[in-house]
Image 1 (cartoon, rainbow, N blue to C red):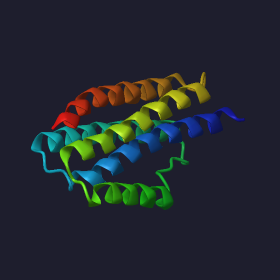
Image 2 (image 1 turned 90 degrees about the horizontal axis):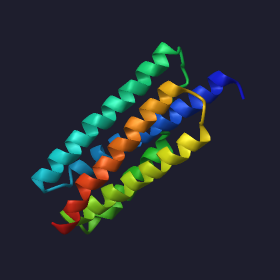
Image 3 (image 1 turned 135 degrees about the vertical axis):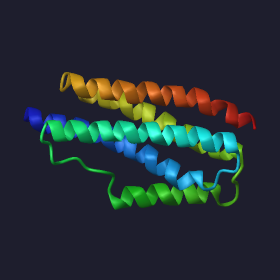
Amino acid sequence: MEPQTQITLYLNAIYQNTRTAVQSIEDIITKVENKDLICELAKEQDEYSCLATECENFARSQQIEGLKDNNWIEKAKLWTSINLGTMMDKSTRNIAEMMLLGTFMGVVTCIKDRHDHKNVSKDLDEILEKLLNFERDNIDKLLPYLEK
């Protein structure tokens, strides 16, 4: 596979991970009643947005035009999952659990992407590591909400 194609695939993997997180928070934050959790999710959303922007800037600097957000089917699945998951239970605990499950999936995706795109781009490795470390930190910040 051509190096530029590999870079584009790697970049898209990271970008879609960040965009999934942003969309998840957008979809769920309106259902949250706990003010501390709202603040935490808003901070997370801002950081995920910054990481997405970092991907967009990298694409521009490398003249990559193939940067892709999640397709509408993925967005609809995510929206449906969140709405079904909160239809009967909007408790802080349930929302924290949903966010934790999504964050765990994000961590798993980062680890798989790091392995699948080994030696493709040191710059993208750095963005991926920022995302991975951020998601791990988010797990620690969300866990206490399971007890509220």
